[in-house]
Image (tube, rainbow, N blue to C red; front, side, top):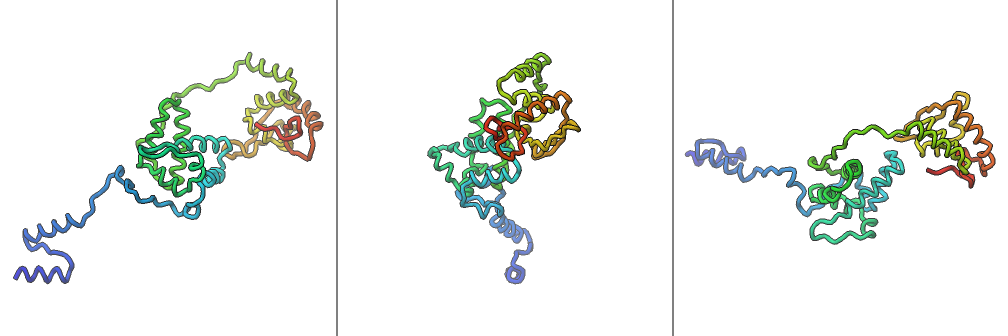
Length: 282
C-alpha cells in the first residue's frame, strides 16, 4: 500500500514525500545528485570558454583595442600625459606571456581586438600576477601608477580586479621646494637668458604656481592686468581656476608684450609665442 501511495505522490507533485526513514533517504539522495557544487572565486573562468563582454563594448568588440581604449581615456578627459602613461604601461601587461605561449609581436599587439584583449586579460588566468611580479624592482610610486592603469582597463573590459593585488605602500615625504638662494639664481638666469621669453615664463610660473602645460595653454584674453589675476581654463582634471600674480609679474608681462607683437604671424590668441610665431609647447 505504501508503495502505491509513494508512486501516486510522485506523479501528482513531482517530488518524493517523506513517508519514513527510507523515503527521506531517497529524497536526500536525489538532492545530492541535482544540487550543483559551489565554486570558489579562484575557480571561476578557468575553462576555455570566451569571457562575456559588457553590452557597452559589444559594438566595438572586433575593433583594435588601442584606438578604442585611447578614445575611452579621451572621453574621461584624461590628460595627454596620463594617456601616454596608461598606454605605455599597459603594453607590458598585454605582452606578458603565460607558460607555453608565444611572444606577442608588435603587429599582434596593434591589431588585437577588444574581444581578444578581454580574453587575454582574464584576471584568473595568472597573466596579471606574472606582470606584477616582473615589476618588483620598480619604485612604489611607479608600481602604483602602472597598477592604476591596469585596474582601469580591467574595469573597462568588464572584469573584476583580483583582491589580492593591492597598491604598494609609499612613505609620506615633504615636497621639495627651492630655497631663497635657489629662487634668486633661477630668476637671475632667466633675466640674463638669450631667450626673449625666459624671464616672463619663469616669473609667471613662480608667482602663480601654474603648471607648464597651463601657462602654454594660456591665452592673452585670460590675463586680467588690472585685477592682477589670470583664468586657468581646463587645468589638471579639466578644472578651471583663478590664479593671482603680483605687480612685479605685471611689469614683466608688460615688457614681454612688444616681443609677442613682433612674433605674431596670425590672429593667434596664445599668450606665449615661440620664435616662429606659434603657441609655445610644453
